Image 1 (cartoon, rainbow, N blue to C red):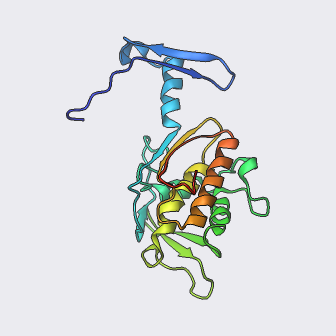
Image 2: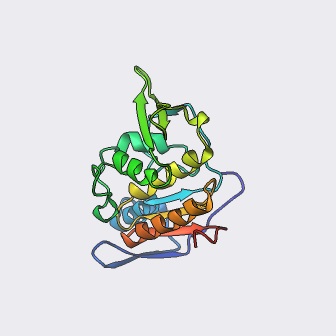
Image 3: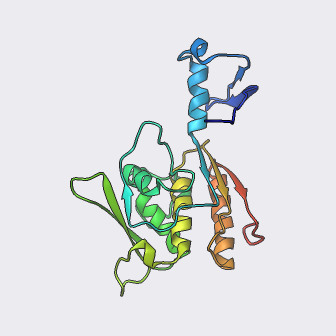
Length: 215
């Protein structure tokens, strides 16, 4: 907002019907108005999710209040709980579903994460008369649900990846830095396999990684 500017040169993209659309500079927002091409261009940007390597760590309380500009889990995964709360009933793309589970996003996230963290379950509890919720995590039925601060960072760092990828639609773009963070080598290999399945389902996945296990 202060010293950085971005010059738009041109853009080409293919819509869901296969038609090639485009925008060329110079153009002005006011002139474009609410034209179909401009709206499609903006929607294309809004369908993009970028997850930084510097993801949010465990938090006790999360906001469930959204605004019109929120479309994804956030650059640091800071809106993961909000996204899951809002879209928990979204039905995951069929080819990405664990068939023994409900197709709902929240159940599919649990099912996929159990492959990494056996016994994993999550509990999303809204706090009455607030726009807040708590997130309980479970990996051992004998201990019950625990606060995220009392469980390893691997869960907090991978949860946004699963929520973003399983909540995506065909044609969406997901950019992820270091999906291997806080995972042991076997988990890193599983993450590479999961991201390959996401890409095969029609979601464009771009990954920056230092892990030969992911590759």
